[in-house]
Each structure stands twice: as structure tokens, then as C-alpha cells.
Length: 264
Ligand SMILES: [Zn+2]
Ligand SMILES: [Zn+2]
Image (tube, rainbow, N blue to C red; front, side, top):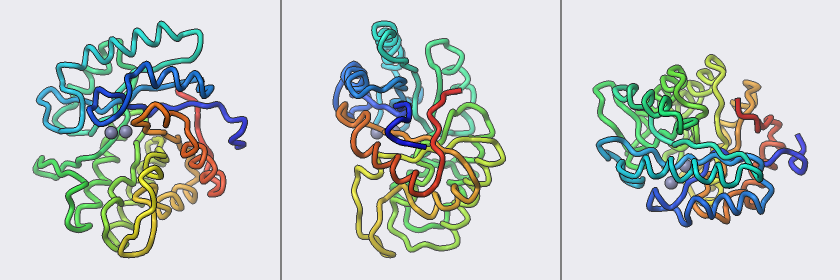
């Protein structure tokens, strides 16, 4: 696929409501219009009704957020297509919550962003606070379980866990296999996340690399013949469709992985 002619889309967009992104939702829309983006999906970090996780909008702003995006969708309808959603974790006991969000009429989709994973006993673990790779398969199995529920449109940064600095081992290998096999089994899309590139290359115990995307996962994605989405995961209006997004398209082209831009 030629990246110069590919339709410009991005379904992974944040805004200032999550308290760690810069710029109002409208600033992202204006940048998208300027950059010739045809479809822009807002997927700010999903609040939970008990505000259990940090780094996201308070639950009480949920209606206001969806109202804001709905108003922008109307105001800019002649320039681009805006969709309304959230990026959030799959937690087993919250199925009713996802269903409620998706049936309200002003929430078009959910992206799976497993920043926390759930152990068999329900304990939620932050992937940023791991001491070893023991749980990597549990993290991967959480993602596959979420794929099966049908609540989520695609898995954002499925290789997020590799931001941790542990040498590659069987847990890493098996976690990748579980995710790729799940994506094949459920026809579920994975996201190649541009924001990982924005974090820069780092020195890890087994060499210099990006935190994510991690090549070992994407080699398996290629082998499996999966097509993927590229998500900007912008936290600044300037990043909506920046040089890093273009770089991500270039990398997938090099790898021989087909990119999806459709939104079915
Ligand atoms: Zn964020
Ligand atoms: Zn994100």
C-alpha cells in the first residue's frame, strides 16, 4: 500500500480531559482538517464509575466529553467524519458498564487499552509496575478474552507490556503467540502504535529498541498475515497526523504488513 495515497484516518485520539494530554478536542479536529484527515476518532482514556485508575477524566465528565465530541461532529461534518469513543481496560466484572456505554447512542466504539491486567482472583496489576515477565501470558490472555467479548474495535498497543526492561524469554514469546493466535481466531484487529515511537529508542538489557512497538510481535503478525491499524495515540494536537505517524506507515510497508483504514 502506498503511504502517499492512503486515506488519512486516525481512531486513537486523546484530549485535555485525561489531564495528561495537551489541547482541547476542537484543537485536534482543526489539526486533523489541516492535515487532510478524513476520519478522526476520539478515544480518550475511559473513566470507570469508581474512578479506580489515574491519568484519565473523572467519571463525572463522561457525559460532557461525549457531548463535546458530538457537537464537534456536527460542526465539522462537511470537513471530516468524527467518531466518539474511549480507550480502556477490559475488566471482567464490568461487562455491564461496557454495554451501557455502547448502548447510550453517543458512544460509537471502544478501543482496548490494557494498561492494567486482571489476575484470576480479580486483582488489577499496572503493566508499568512489573518486576518480572511471569504474568506476561496473563496479560496476553486478558487481551484475547476482551477480543472475544465483542465490545472492542481493536487492541491499542498490544505490545505495551514490552516497555518493561526484562530480557526476552519464553513468557514474552508465548504472550506474543497468544495475542496473534487470538487476533486470527476472532478476526480481531491490532494497532501499531505511533506513540511508542514518540517515546524514543532506549537502552534495554537486551539492546537498544523502542518500548513498543516491539519487532518480535510484529514479525509474528506478518507471519500470520494479519492487517493492522495504525493509531496516532496523539496527546498533543500537533501529533494527530505527524511525521511519526508517517514513519509508522513506512515501517509497516517495510515489514510487508497491510494497513487498514476502513471502519466497519
Ligand atoms: Zn494517555
Ligand atoms: Zn491512547
